[in-house]
Every structure is written in structure tokens, then in C-alpha cells.
Length: 174
Image (cartoon, rainbow, N blue to C red; front, top):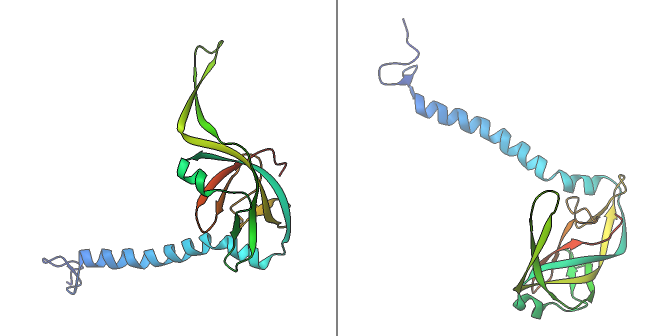
């Protein structure tokens, strides 16, 4: 009678059992990679296959936790460009920077207190950005791609040749 695994650990006398599991793992890894890639590029598929409407909006935002070095690089009318060189964002106004604040909530439930701690190594600065956004059939405003929804409290990345900043959208109706 023919054994499936022989005394040397080979399957049908030819293939080692560990090699078999490595090959089986690789066979299952390729479809996972393919479908993972399809999932990650779905946003670009939607942008190219569904009609979008683009328009420009004024968005108030807060650049937070800026270092003094970053503050020296930022100026009004800095622009962000897309891959084709089109302007998609511009800093219109910058307010005076203020030290970043963190607060800690303490106290019993009936009397809650906030202790504000100011860090003079980092700064927060309010600004107004002029952004080119687009909408799809769901009527939400997006910046750059379908993962950057423009709404109050949403993060936005603003990138120029000199720096890359993160800001939080303030008071935007979305």
C-alpha cells in the first residue's frame, strides 16, 4: 500500500511537508494581494468612472502643533498643486499663532474641571484655505480624493514644495 507521507516526511515520496505548506500559503497569498490592491484603488476607480462636479470653497481651518521652524516657512498665498501642476489649494489668511494648549479633565462627575496646559514649543494658528473640492452623486465635498471629506472637524493635509501640514476644518457646513 502506498503511503501519503513516508518516513522522511515527504508527501507521496517527492515533496517535503514543509515545502508543501509554503507553496500552499503562497497560492492563497496571491489572491489576497490582488483583492487588497483592488480594494485600495477603488477610490480612484470611482473618481474616474462616475461624474464629479468640482468647485472652489473657502474653508476655515486650524493648523495645530506647529514648531517655530514650521511657522517661519508658512506664509499667505502658499499653494498646493496636484500631480498635473494644477493649483488645488491656497492659504488666503493666517492669524497670529498662539501656544498650543492641552487640557486635562479632572474632578468628580458633578463638578468637572478643565486644566489648560500651554506648551510654548508648539503653536496653533487659524487660517482660511481656498480649496478646489469636488462632489460625486452623494453630494459630499471631497478634497484631492474620496478619502478626504471636507466637513467640520475633518483633517486636511496641505502640502507644498517646502512643507506638509495637517489642519482641522472649523465651522464648515459640509
